Length: 203
Image (cartoon, rainbow, N blue to C red):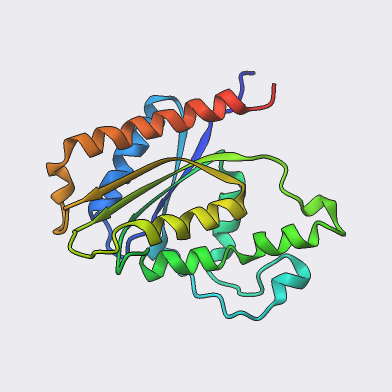
């Protein structure tokens, strides 16, 4: 049998379905599939992810104590060979639905600390990732906070953010279709992620 097809978790982080950032993600998914990768689509707004409550349980167990939609997302994060996040930018950072998912990645940070006494909890491989951002413009603080927030989470997940695509201008739903270069770039990123997974997989 041949090697398994690379699985790319495509996280749609906007609270609005089929908005500009998700259309950009669709283009990336086309690139993944064109390179013979598998797409796992995750629209966060439909997953029922509540906020972290800072209870500290994961600091002891390495497992989140909240039973909600995030319970189904953790295995999908773990199974992904690469992760791409697409998001609108709200007040210079990611929307609340995506930030809730980010904050609920705290168990991964806790496991890194617990690995000092339980090496089985230590991350074993690094994976490629990408970030696709869209904002309407006008905010002088730009994309930096959204990029930094996402890269912080990627670091905890063992994800190397190899590609960043930031598109300024699209505001109303569907405006991204007027940016064909951005859509092409997103598709190229999808192809590149699959190629990177194949390049770095252990022999």
